[in-house]
Length: 631
Image (cartoon, rainbow, N blue to C red; front, top):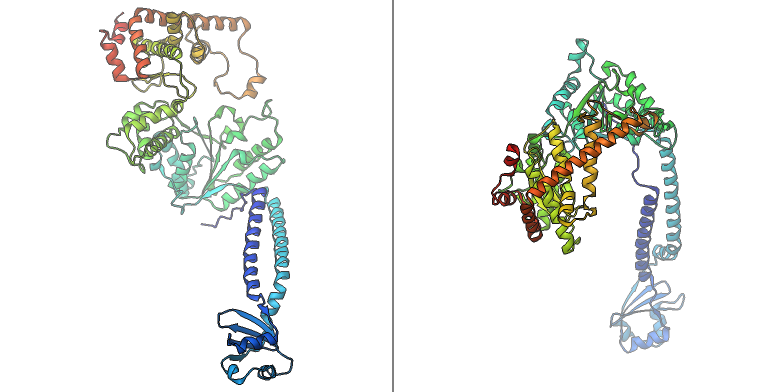
């Protein structure tokens, strides 16, 4: 396989690089200063004494050794100290001392030695104070020149691709299909790509043309990037990973240049996979108002289209891209011959969630009581990323409490933390607010338990989490893919049950029902404008097909209904809301005694779990679901 030469781009900013150089210079300066201090201590001259004083010291027997270096005398005393002196030039030391009256007997007690003078240490000590600043100045200019050289090289490599490469030999980064749980249909669809990359000749010999582009579409966190890496891992080919936003720069033409360079490098490494994450950053509709007039983005998109068209079947390079906004992509990207293979990744179902939890729990020690099936049942609507986060939060919770293994309670607490946010222990409600919140949540829970098509209650709490002062956790009894009108109407009543309970008990309303009203209004509007569930308006859909449609398209298009129809829609929404509120009020009035019991329990315990809640209802002699079904 050819060697992949990717441009090396420094990830350090100018400020960080400059700071790093300054710190290095200071460290070197400190080291040199220390060396200089040691050397100057060594070269420090001892105290100078006269010859007469030297003679006196010899006569009283205080000197043990004298070293002669030219005319310099290095004198060592019996106490270990050193002093220096000078003898007469041209005279021997013994003759000089004899002239000053030192007896031969005292002189014999002293060790005399003659050393040839060395000029190296002398000159080193003399020049070092001048050399150190000079060396530092030269080093500083050398670093500055090198920095300027790197900057000029980066200017030339500005248009180079910045894709990260995962090679097949990298076992640490390698991912295969066994590391991706669920998405069975998507994996089957992508096995064709894997087989083509493994053995392209089998397809080319029969005249088959593998899709040039594969578009992975799905909600955030469903594993699009992970699945693309798994395709590369299964096929054993290089994986070029780049984000769509990395193509777009301030300067026009840079993005197109990086696209050309990326495809050029990938072709040299073929067979290979190019993966463009969040392709909607450059692949949006061209020329449609807001977000569509960016010349650099459009040139980058045009270059991607050209490169896709320029592929030959034997180049064995496949482009994969991921987006959670397929509705905003330009139609030229999606036509046959470009991204003509589309793979949809849905949110995992119950079995898939259990398998994902098993994968993410492999390196985490679990208690024997952990039941991942129960955790999977309590996490409908969770994506793979949510489940990974859930396992991580459970591990963090166990570690904070000083335990070595993760328990089932840790997992259950993590579910609520991921869904609603952490407990706000500092957010304490007053007794009156706690009473209102208790009746509010009791209303939600009671109506949800009574209405036959509403989801069963798992937990009721008035402990603040995130922005909510309390919450009622409802989970479907089984996985749903289709929702009936009866289900929506019951859920509307449940959403307004807290509002109705406050009005019934306190004859007043608070801001606690604001989010419920927004949610209920959105559901009522969807019933009428998207699902055709209004008897008066009938089977007609209004507005754009996707709620997350590209705003630029919305600005440029007219409404597909008249002002009269808008008024009819508003009236129908009001009708749905009033009917739902009336149903909730009827349930609460009929079971007002039980509503008070639930609220009182919440004020005392703050939290009621599913078993305790069901027992509380059964103790009052009614199976509420069955009662409504037979009513």
